[in-house]
Every structure is written in C-alpha cells, then in structure tokens.
Image (tube, rainbow, N blue to C red):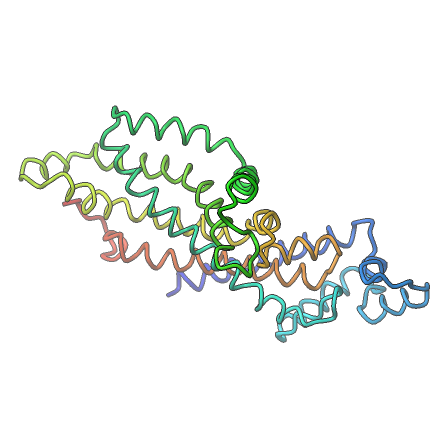
Length: 313
C-alpha cells in the first residue's frame, strides 16, 4: 500500500510540470485567444469586444495568476468553459472520451491477438520462412510513422476499394483508426514479444520440461507465455497509456471525434481551458494505467507475491 501511495505522490510534480509547460507554450504563442474566438465565430469584433472577452476569461491577468486560478478551479472540479462555444470543458470531454477509449481498447486487443502468437512462434521457429517474412515486414513497418500507415489505409480502403467509411456515425468508422494503430503497434510488439519469449526458451528449465514429455504447445502457450506475461503486461500498460495520449493525429486524420481531435482543435483555436483539461486528464490516465499494471505485475510475478526469489518450475 505504501508503494502505491508513493507512486501517486510522485505523479503530482509530473502533472504540475506537464500542465505548466503546456500553459507556458500557449501563453507565449503569438496568436491571441480573444481574436481567435471572434475569427472562428465569423463575427466582426471591435477592440472593446476583444478586451471584454479577455477580461471575462482572465486573459488580461499575469501568467502565474492565470495558472494558479486554473489549478484552483480544477481542484474544485471545474475545468472551465471552452472558448470555442462556451460549453463546459468537462461536458465536451465526457462526450469525446468514449470515442478515444473505443479505438484504444480495440487496437490494444487486436495488437495482443496478433503479436503474442506471432512473437512466440518466431521465437520458437527462428529459421522458418514465416519467421523470416515476419521479421522483414516488422523491420520495414517499424520505420513507418503510424500516421503514414493511416493515410495509406485511408486511401486504399475508402478511395480505391470503397470498403470502409471513416465517418464516426457509421458503425464501421471505428475500424480504420483501430486498424491503423494496431498495425503501428504490432510491428514493435512482435519484435518485443519475440525477444521476451526467446529469453525464456533459452533458460535451463526448458530442457527439464521437454525431458518430462510436456508438449510444445503447452510449453509455449502455458509456461513461456505465463513467465513472459510480467514483461508483456508492463509493455502493454506503457503502450496503452502512451496510446491514449498519442491518438490526436490519428483521430484528426480519420475525423474521429475523440479526445485527441478535441485537443488538436483546441490547440488550433488556442482554447486554453480545453487544452489544459484534456492534457491533465490524459496524464492522469497514463499514471493510473501504469499503477494498475503494477497490480497485475504482482499477480503474475511470484517473486513479488511471495516477497522473495523463486525458482522457475
């Protein structure tokens, strides 16, 4: 329990640091939120209207006063109102969050379904044709940015083959962004899981299992997978946390109305409350997911559960 309390306390300076950096970048950028607001609204604005907007949103106050006031409001549960449409930031985030979670969960599950069997197989059959083919594909895939994969899939499946729609109102809208992220992650996951499984297969206890007549499938998908699960869970947690905070470009490409696109739109319009709200919750989500991973780490790693070293059976 003390360990998790310490971990939670360590997140406080991280959250403060991230929000301070974000706030500073917005504050120092040359564009003015007040002018941006009226420009996007398409309404002519006098200097008096601009000054009134600045005063109402405390934009005429010093930097640290603005930042401190934002934290005071945040701790009260008030994320403020969006400069774009005057709607509560929390309301817009609650509407967008399920979209981001859906593609994050779908892509993560698909990544594990593809990567675990292929990674273990490639570790076991290092010289097979399939392993060499997978190695070649992953080597190329790792070098391609995920957004480029998205643009390629967007062109192929919507413009060439007309298979999927990218519009969120369509039930197939989730497929394209999920598939894009899954491919980008799988290229890395397969290599990582292959390395993890290879280390397990090279350990001395494997000879004992084979000598006892235990089948290959049982060794690979029971013993190896279980012993490798600690590292797989850690890898998954880190990736899932990063995924939640890194979907902005993919959501924008596919016009997917999640938190990432909400953040991009807020940055373009310099919507400070929206930017800060999305950023702080993405950071908190990353931290919480990693804490949950630590709990699962304790379940799968006997050395942590028993408080000491154990020999692999």
